[in-house]
Image (cartoon, rainbow, N blue to C red; front, top):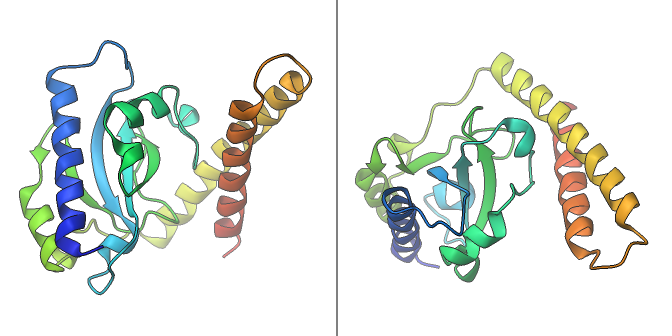
Length: 197
């Protein structure tokens, strides 16, 4: 997709996030507090098929493990049309850094405190991205962050495994539990690999 089209999608999502802060939807209790762009969209030469976004929610880190989805995430994605547009959402806790081994020097698009970052959207559309990206963490901070996330991810994988095993032969759909287990496993393996680099 063209860069200006990607910037348009990001601006629309930012406006939707802002609208939900001003007029919360009573059906969806999940509150996104910030929207960051990450991944390919931050490469000036790339024309990504999907726009990677970090969605920051005011939940403890343990409730938002790497690659996990907080309770209500799918409903929020449907409500905001996130699930119908070319986005790859990564959920993050507002009580921990947004960056990690995969979210490298993201660019803030919107926050509940500062509003829509128009200059960032303009920079993304023009491919002049370096000035709007977050600073890189130090090696010590990076290693500490990966270790923290690995611990959270391990706990999430253990919990998802236990829940899946408990529900395995029970009536009802197994898919939600299997999906949660898959995401927990994928997140844990990615962080384990990052911790060994």
